[in-house]
Length: 477
Image 1 (cartoon, rainbow, N blue to C red):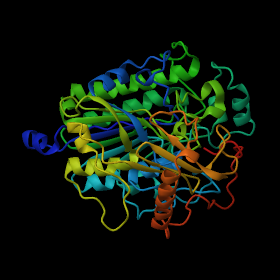
Image 2 (spheres, one colour; image 1 turned 60 degrees about the vertical axis):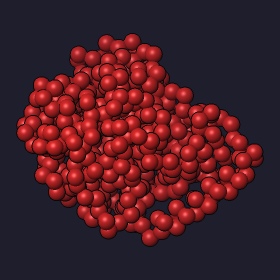
Image 3 (cartoon, rainbow, N blue to C red; image 1 turned 90 degrees about the vertical axis):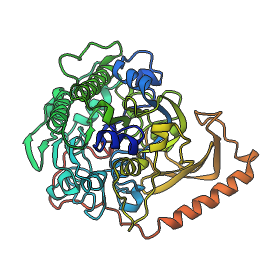
């Protein structure tokens, strides 16, 4: 998924000059890989708008999402808490499905709710995946409006459709039938189209996003634009279908890049770019199971559903002329840090009645100070798989690459990687660094004690009597 943030330069000074709080936009892609855009090394896919963002803003090369699959990743972004704390991760059902009975609990506090206290208008456009029942949709979590597909765009599929897609995904130009995937478009809390015409879904999300910016140009606002693509099934509109050099997947990414350009253009047309920060990222790594329809992790190991770097390190760009100090940021950051950063830049207050897991990155954005984050915990399927401290990453559990729905493997002995010199996690150096291994194992023990007593699993409960048609064995994200 794609993620964009809009904010300002040195916040206090800038707000005094403008007498206006900064706007924030999050563009969050679904299953976009580290190697899927030109500024992160893709030699085929054309992403000129993202390239400009990266050149004029900050490109973060070590930026992490809270989890390598959809639902928990989104929960981590919006709440600033590891999903294990909110019950938004599960060893039984990794994400929400159309027959899920629950959603993000109302007790959780989102970015939208934090900013609302400062008078922000907010809109969620696109994929939600934090509960599709009315009581769990965005308006129950601080957003003023919602328009989009409430869960993954491959769900509630006709039997056979999902496996047909899997079997044909070696063909880079294969396009599925819209009718095979019975997902709805919801406006606020009402279904307005089913099945969704996904050939125009990126275009329509973009139009909604631009309209929201135009309508709120005089107010501080927060836009959460969460694209349904490039999660499979892949679709592109007429202006982009067949126009890239890399097949349907590249068509999809190039249309998303166009969408980013439209958002930037609307900010400039409304003279908002100097009071806005834009951040672009993805919810997790590429779904490599789907071959030519699954994207690329570039130099990183594995992809979505794994806690290798390809599953949780995502391409990330922050943009804001005059506010974001341009450059390449090679220190750690995370989507867990966004709520802290937005709160600091807007003058909002963070919750004080719960454990938060984020850091304030505002001084990194505006002054290129060193990132305060030097540690990250890799959670997946309600289990802690690995920890990173500075350049060292220690694995204690893993899931096999690509076929991530297979059982978690508890390693016979921990594996240690130096991510500065071994970005692809090829060379286990645990035998040569026993003291580092010992220190990191102690940190793992402390972290596991810190999350004890967290909210129970919210993903496991199902709606009684719901007849879900999709093949859940593989369609689990």
